[in-house]
Image (tube, rainbow, N blue to C red; front, side, top):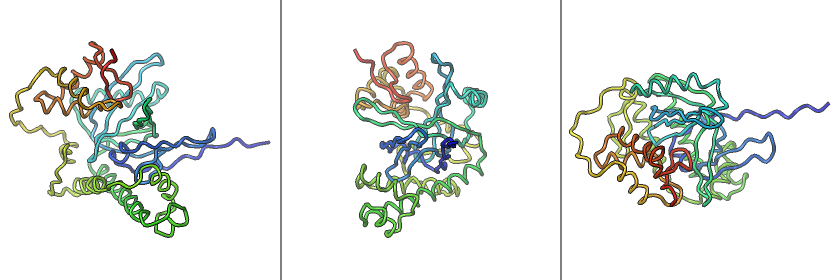
Length: 313
């Protein structure tokens, strides 16, 4: 009697948001039980990942199949997007609790194990997210531990990438160059698809994460400064500096941002909120404006989770 094929559970890779957001190389499993992956620029083959950050957005949505949830986790390098599907009722009570706390103004740290997902547009763009498998609210100490582990894992991939630059793209040559065996396959795929690129942004992300984990006073300038662990864990009040006077209606600011920035794949949620904030509007007004344009006025569409385009005429 033939034994049924069993699917091997993939290891949850420690991964920062920037590395995953930059990835646009999916690898479909060849057989029914073969896993699929997203290949990052640093050669990580991501089927499952352990990610973390400050909860930054949670929404419940309705579809014919039932309720599902979309959310954001912000780490020191960017934003992870994840979903709890309608066919995951075992997670709905927990995500409802997260949603209620978020809507009441609470901001907290979370860790999440998710399975890699991607969406490919008609013009070939690839956008990544996760489907949640499990998640929990964590304290500062546990999040610090995740920051350190993920920084070390990222540095390991960075070192492997640098070693691969002086090597032929064959398993034997990469192994001889010092690329760890678990990264060889992914490195061959990544180098063949992405080519050579500047790794400085990834190294800065690691420095930001180590700085946050150690409580360092070193300030690394970025376009989107991250909250300290104390701010995230204790939900301290924001500074009371006088906000700039809003320029223009928030809806017009959002629509103009899409007109200017949409290169065919849509404009992501964070970019739109940032544009509105820079024009003097509050984050809450920006979020309400996006919802109004999408759900009431119908001026924009969301072809893929958290990416927006003008509604075709």
